[in-house]
Length: 202
Image 1: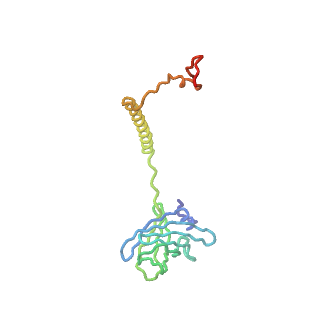
Image 2: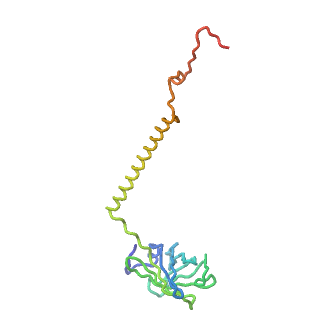
Image 3: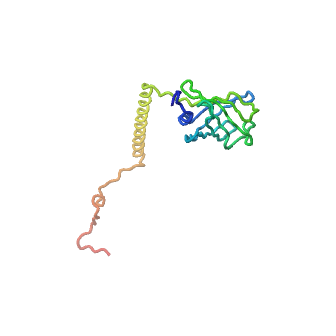
């Protein structure tokens, strides 16, 4: 993950962080939401394409840097509506997010306001990058590997024991019989006939 420095570009932030999770308030009721970055076009001023979802909404957003504003000030506008079953984000209304990217606690935060529609009931719109789970300690990994190998061997031995037991049980019950191989035809691929000289068979 890139860190904040003087040359940090908003394009790099979204390209490096594709999943964002957060929440917002609407009429003082909290709703969880998420944003997935589909593509970052770096040519020219640049455009970021993203999908935004909440419990009742699925829309596509297009965003970019606002001219004459600091580098990390980003504005998203509604491009396509896939699902909108509440009064919060309506298909026939504009929806625009204007906010700033902040680097804090080892991750990125996008804190924004809903600037369209102008008169709205949104507040505290915040999205954060997904936190990476820490890698297990070496001791824990060794224990996991040992358990995996040990259990695999145990199951293999149990399987072999069950198979041998079934064979022995089948022989004792007569389901599996020993087939004698003392017949002449079993010893040679060429069949032999007990025909005495002078016998004529019609």
